[in-house]
Each structure stands twice: as structure tokens, then as C-alpha cells.
Length: 366
Image 1 (cartoon, one colour):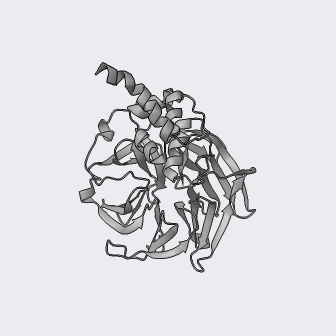
Image 2 (cartoon, one colour):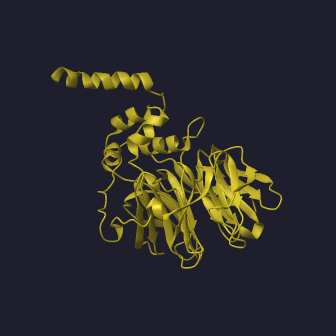
Image 3 (spheres, helix red, strand yellow):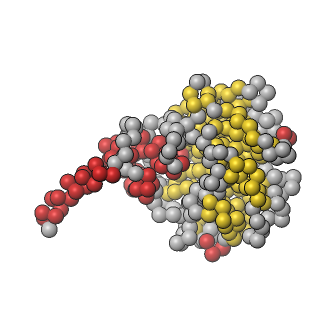
């Protein structure tokens, strides 16, 4: 037995050498505060248990996001097969999704630009838009300040047409999957994400924030006086003021999140924020943030081995905050069919939950 244990480090080293992928990243140490306890408003419950959810568009792979056209009730959803689909109202489990447009890439976050009757979306190629009448596809932004968009992740559109987008990481997709690139950015810990503003009148893009550790969800406040953006790797949601005396300044709206925040959606009725949590922070993620040499080893594992090493077992979690950043409620779900939640929105008193893993949009009656 002692001989076996003594040989274990050698066996692990040989295994890593055999399966390693040479990725050029250099992790650094980061400090994460202690994980908040699941008590009070954060206490576990079964509100998102799979048995309570209706599965919509069950044949659509990896629907990262979905958005409703509030004029018609039509639902649009992105998918990992390169298509954007739509479901005409009334939207039910029996509704058959139809193909809207083939992006030629991989659409992620979606946003309605109602005044211009177009759907704006984040794609592996950059910021894109599709005219909902002609279905003509337009590429709006592929680089900012001479630096290509590495992974355009989420978008929000103001009433005047201004688009705010997150460029999650400088680590471009290439042949890697979205989840693999996400894991690599978090492991590196340097923070190469950007928040970008696109002005459709001048067709110019400018950087509003830099050095975010996987810039993820972005959403405008109800009055559009500020926006919020998820700094996933630092377990924070930041606020950038757009109007008033504080315009151009930023602060932390929500700190020390219990998990890795993904999509953020603003409720147009009350201005509250719904936050999709992709995964819990756990002991392993805390350890990796402090031990760059371990992170370096993991970073050179194949993608299929990388994600399970840093993301805990699937768990449904949605957090609901008021406009001041106070947690109002949390919705939890576990079980063998639980899927990490990447987006959340509310329509007709139902929650619509997207995911990168698995098929279909999950719908919960509130």
C-alpha cells in the first residue's frame, strides 16, 4: 500500500503529460472572500426542482439565452448548432421552434432592439444583429481599439439603440468550446474581459471597463441611469453609472456572490434584477484561485476533463435582487436532471431558464 501511494504522484504526472494540451496561459493568484453560508434568504429550497419545470423546445441544443418580443409574445432563443430559433405565441411545451437565421457561429446572449425591429446578439464572431422582417444578418463589431473580440458573451440594448456588450475574455474560441474557454479564463485569473459600448449612429465601439475576470451578463436599469455587469471570476456584479452626477463612475452593486453569475435580466415592471448562477463556488475553486501552479496543470488538460475539475455537480440557482442590490429571494433546484442556469427572464408570470448544457428551455410557473 505504501508503495502504491508513493507512486501516485508519478502516475498523475505521467497521465497529465500524456493527455495535456499546450495552452499558453500563465495563472496568477487571486483572493476570494469566504463563501457566504446558505442561510436566510439564501437557504436551499426546491422551487427550481426539475419536476416543477416545463421543458420547452426540447430538441434545441444548448439554448444559452432566450428573449421575448414584448409586442407579440414571440420567443427567440440561441442554440449551439449555430441557429437562432423562434416560437410564436402562445408559447407552450407543444410549440414547435422554427428557424430564424443561421449565424455561421455560435450565438450566446440575445436582446430585442424593438424600435429598430431587430434582434441583437453576441456571437463567437462578434456583435451581430438580424432584421426580424427581412432576416438579413449584420455584423456590427468584431474588434475594439484594434483588439479582436475574444468571446462576445452578452448584450443589452438601450432605447436609443446603444448596445452594451461583454467581451468575456481575450482567449478567443478558436477550436475550443465556450465552456472550455470560460474555465481557462477563470483558471488564469488575470482578467482580460471588457465591457464595450457600441453607438449605432456613428458605428463606433468604445471600451467602458477593462480587466474583468470573465465579463458575463450585462443589463440596463429600468430607467437606464446605470447598467450592471457580472465579473464572474471575482463573484461580483458591478454597477456603471450612465447618467446624473455619478455618470462614468463605477462601484460594486453585489459582492461576494455564492456562485458564478451568468446572465442578468432586468424586470421591466419593477426594475429588479434576476441573476442566473451557472455554478456554486466551492472549495476547489477557492483553492485554485490561490494556487497558480495547480491551475496551470489543470489548464493543460483536455476540455472534457477541464470543466468537471472546476465546476461542481449541476445545480439550479437563480437569485433575485432589488434595484439597490438587496437579495429578495433565491430559487434552488437539484436532482439528476438539474442543469446549470445560464440565463433567466420572466414573461407572463413564468421564469424562462437557459442552459449551455443539455437541450431545451426550462419554464417555471411563479
